[in-house]
Image (cartoon, rainbow over all chains, first blue to last red; front, side, top):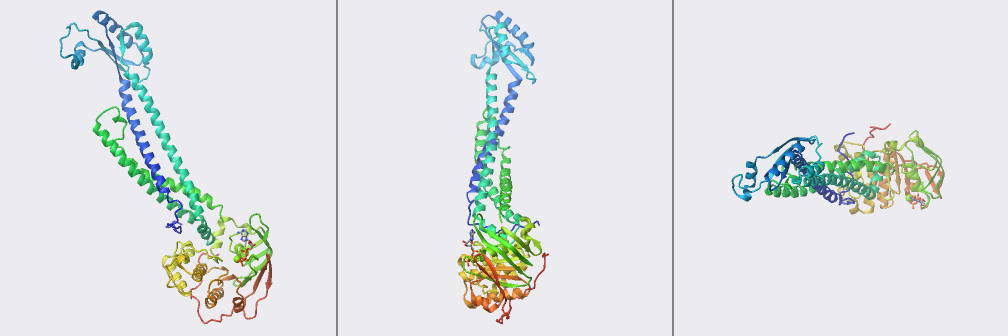
Amino acid sequence: MLKRPLNFLSADKQSDALLPWVISVMLFLSALALSFALGVNRGLDSWSKGLTSTLTIQVVHSDTIERNRQAEATIKMVRATPGVTSANIMADQYVVSLLSPWLGNMPIGSGLPLPSLIDVTLDDSGDFNLDSLKSRLNVAAPDAALDDHQAWMRQILDLAGILEVLLIAIVVMITLCTITIVIFGCRAGLAAHQDTIEIMHLMGAEDTTIASAFDRRYLQHGLKGGAFGVCIASVVLYGVAYMAARMGQGLLNAALPDLNTVWWVLLLPILSGLLAMITARITIRRALTDMV
Amino acid sequence: MISFENVGMRYDMGGEILRDINFTLDRGSFHFLVGPSGAGKTSLLKLLYLAFRPSRGLVNYFGHDLSNIERSGLPRLRRRIGVVFQDFRLLEHLSAFDNVALPLRIQGAQKKQIAEHVEELLAWVGLQDRMHARPATLSGGEKQRVAIARAIINKPDLLVADEPTGNVDPDMAERLMHLFVELNKIGTTTVVATHDENLVKTVGAPILQLSKGELSHIKARPDKHTTPYGQKAPSYKRTKGEQS
Ligand SMILES: Nc1ncnc2c1ncn2[C@@H]1O[C@H](COP(=O)(O)OP(=O)(O)OP(=O)(O)O)[C@@H](O)[C@H]1O
Ligand SMILES: [Mg+2]
């Protein structure tokens, strides 16, 4: 019997009038948590690409000969290290051009000691071990310094990973909370409409007829609440994304919601509507079988 | 059509409200149920309209042993029963029209058919001008008439009425009783609980008397099923749609 549900519930005596508001708060929070989780995920991708591919080692020594010796030793050692694709010394010319912003243009061999910079490329195998290379370098070339902003980046990356898991956990918890609230709302609704339901039963209404009136009502609650919460969340997200776009490229920027990818939050009200409806359906049907 | 054999009933953990109830309602019969307040009239009617199951005894319902009927089978039976509750139990947020239409809607009747029948019946009980009023704005007697209209709108096989004339003046009481009698004539088995001696006398149907939970039978008077009033009840025909 697929028909328009028979609506016999009162609209004014709303025991569950607060439900759409609660759902909208929940949806607001989960839309934010979800989009930041996605942002962090995107950040993780772009950061870890930069992280794993290259590494710089510099050797600083006032004595050019000693410096070159240590640089040679470093290259030899690094090339023999697992996970390394190549290790090449940068030409002095290039080093000078890198330093020019600070020192101005100066001829090579001006007597000013230059550092040797060694450009190391890593493969994706993950075999590369920064700490072990560092300690071996200490012995072979005591004046070689590994530029370890990479290590710092790795910590950031770990942190971001934890943050992502945390955000997803928050979304899961909010979902469970919402389900619980809907269940309580349903019970309150059942209690408030107990008399009506009993009369419906006595007039020969099937449980499904009665339950579908509730289904429809909770679908509406979920859609309404969800739409409102997501509207507010969208405004916030677009605001943040707009500001992020104005800040330009940057480390932080990569982890912020992106204007092109937040459209999916618009699907959330449908999900919350279905969630509320299915929860109500199960709760109500169970309760109805205990009645007259 | 309906028979009770040694039926007992109790509410929750309390003592037996009804004891050793024996009676048979033949198809198309008309009975009054009388007895002092607290005797158990409403309780017996609750068994009849399937709001309760007896705590002991045998109940045969439209040819089925009630104890063999599962909960899922009850709606089908209940649709064949019309009930006028002692306290009306109208849905307060629905208009008189919608209250009366509810049994038809539950059965999935056509919109047009619903409108016709409901309007005709409400007019017949004198509520054509109060059709769209909510119960809260109706007088006690008006509510009672809405409740009666709701009970008989789908021409039930069994009509159970608990004090259906308690709140109306004698004229209206007779008019309503006449409606019951007309309905009974087209085959509705009817049980009316009442305190109203006059009513019992005018109809002259057999009487079930309850006192302190026990039932005794009083024979019908000779002038059974007389209809002393010239008015015609609504002329609808019995539709044997999904009845089995
Ligand atoms: N829901 C209930 N739970 C427990 N006891 C009840 C319940 N309803 C009625 N009773 C008790 O059952 C007995 C019979 O009540 P019932 O309502 O059947 O009487 P009645 O004959 O309809 O009375 P009245 O003429 O006043 O309507 C009373 O003693 C009453 O207190
Ligand atoms: Mg009573």
